[in-house]
Amino acid sequence: MTVDVSVVVGTRPEAIKCAPVILELRARGLNVRLVSSGQHADLLSSTLRAFDLKADIDLQAMTGTPDLSALTTRLIERIGAELSASPPYLVLVQGDTTTALAAALSAFYSRVPCGHIEAGLRSGRLDAPWPEEMNRIITDRLCTRHYAPTEGARTALQAEGIAAESILVTGQTGVDAAVWMAARQDAPSPRLMPFVGKRLIYVTAHRRENQGGRIADTLRGVCAALDKHTDCTAVLSAHPNPIVQAEVAQVRHERLVVVPPLDYADSIWMLVNSAAVVSDSGGIQEEAPSFGTPVLVARDVTERPEGLAAGFIRMVGTQSLRVEAGLTEVLADSSLRNRLKAQPNPYGDGRAAGRIADDVLKLLGT
Image 1 (cartoon, helix red, strand yellow):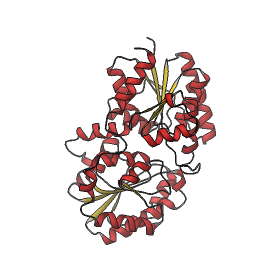
Image 2 (cartoon, one colour):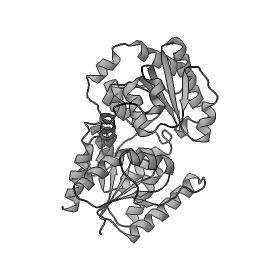
Image 3 (tube, helix red, strand yellow):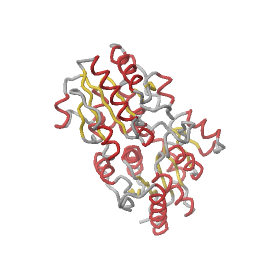
Image 4 (tube, helix red, strand yellow):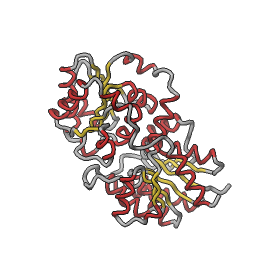
């Protein structure tokens, strides 16, 4: 059977944000091939299962611990071979990962049109996030169709010379996924039952640019805020990266509970049920506004300024004093969540996948 669309993913965020699109395209009768690069194999497969999806092709590129150059080379070779063996009419990639970059370049070399989901995000700094900022700039140059999540992303693309007719503002597919998952949750999973009824702070940290002491500093700020707010418990979903784990081990507090990486459903439950979030994640900045949950961003810059302008996110960096001050201020504002819940999510309305599917069908002439 001829493949209409190949969707290439390699990490958990890609799986989350591509799942609504895959489901929508298949519901409309297209033959969609889901290709896993294997970049983050364990987290990827478990996340796909949350949407009743599994990879049709697993390239298993993440053997050993290759550096970025070796990983990129391996991905280009394996994705390119897959596209040559069974060329689709269209390739879809998402975001700013090494997988997205390699798949877009492979599609370009194979002369297969490529669409970029989440096109146009820019921090304005090549070192933050690193290497993701460069990945997405190059990916956008390689792609022929650009699915921008916001008007700001469209503006950024046009400022770089991307043709206006190739850009479609769709909203963020991650919002589709978050709303979909939250609507299907009747009760928390057993691992989260101990946190039911508690005033929670959800904490995540993983970015490369925050390694080397900055993650530990962020956690010290969280602990200082816990000392001031004795009714709160912080739940840290600890990334499996050994460097991150070593920083987490430096910080202890009786109400800082460290748990293994939460699966997607559990992460959404935490967003819905937390008083505040401290995170360096991009996806969480987009998801949390759907539930009126404020996010303190443990980074110096963000490529998602819409949430900042609307008051959903606050930039606190990673210095412990700034994290403590920002978290203390948010926790002391008893009406903040109600105010945020009254506002729409600036990143999307939960219908982005449908807009992308409409466009794909038009491109394929079906």
